[in-house]
Image (cartoon, rainbow, N blue to C red; front, side, top):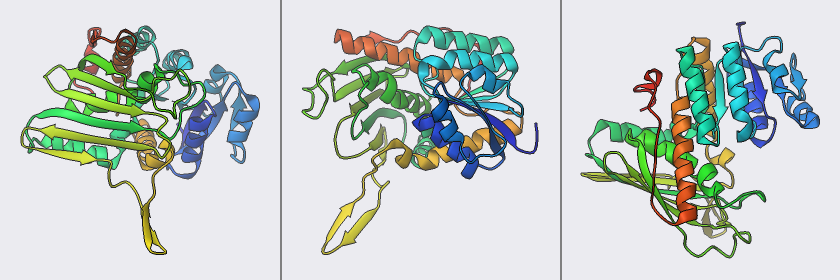
Length: 341
């Protein structure tokens, strides 16, 4: 490894392009060494102006490019399993955006492949673990001053959903963040899920069940509810309130700017997750670079990515059936005992 960590970025879409910018302009200790995207023009556009970088349409070629020490996977979820296994085969440290692998069987194959290596190589990109408000809430709950957590109330709203969004994606794409955040904040696995469906908003595309109300049970008796509303029309809002035996704590209300002018005041509401969680993404990638340069792997593990996929699949079955669905996790390999909890 040279003075700078050479990173191959797989995927040059909305998320990948933002990570390329972040590695080039924000994060210290790293540089973009290669970019890969099936769309050659998009890959070239994302790499424009960067020196010493190679551009590819084949992810394998990017992993094999000169100067590549690590991999950041920001391609669509169905491509993640192949990319992760290829990185493992080369011994390359990985930061993989969520979902790690959309289907639980593929996610388990990734867990088993890394476990066979006997060491962690991958961190999964659940960036809320790096958000300042979430970290304060985690520290408060871990400190125990409020007593045992009884409930988490979560809100997840988007201005609008992409044209390809399905009712299932409200759970396996949007609520996947709450799934990981709840597991991390509470230090518990989620054991069952039910989904209630209010009448869909007039702002939802035809056929999309939006909003949804998702209810999770945990292994030690806490409840987690999530209001997910991806076509609210007014802003990107994420909130979380922990209700405990001796008090409560809420985050997400103050992440705004108030503008006063001409006899009136208005609050700015973020319109995009890259705005609301910009600092969290910056901290996450910097922490990954720093840990990788030390020869360490921190943050959410592939077990966390697998658990999120299993819970999300159970949530989709609950949405489709209208009933309560139990979460069935495989046995946790020893490599992940106590990790990320």
